Amino acid sequence: MVLVTMTIEQRSALGDNSRWLEQTGRLLANLGFELVEPDRTDDSDTSHLLVAIRPTPTQRHFDPDEIACWTSEGGRGKAAKLDRETRYPIDADYSWGLISVTDRLG
Image 1 (cartoon, rainbow, N blue to C red):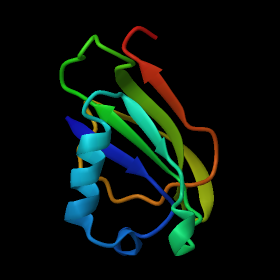
Image 2 (image 1 turned 45 degrees about the vertical axis):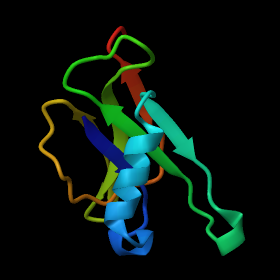
Image 3 (image 1 turned 180 degrees about the vertical axis):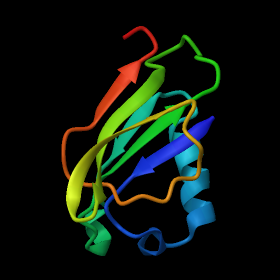
C-alpha cells in the first residue's frame, strides 16, 4: 500500500515522520481515504488528505485508483496525477486547487 499525504507544509513541519506514517497506516487500514482535521489544541490550522493507493483493490470500500491535483512549478499551477504507476516517494510542492480521488470503478 502506498500512503499519499498531501499538504502544502514542508515535511519537517510534520514532526516525527515515522510516527506520522505509523498513525496514517492505522487510519487507512480499512479506508481508501481520510481527511484529518487540524488539532486545535496545539494551534495547528492545516488539514491533511490521506489516500491509500493499494496494489490490489480490497473491494471492501472506496479503493482509490488515481488522485488528480495541482502542483507548483515555476510559480505557476500545473495539473498532476498520482496513481499506481507513480514512483514514490514524491518531492513536489502541492498547490491549492481541486483534488479528485477516483475509485477503481470510476
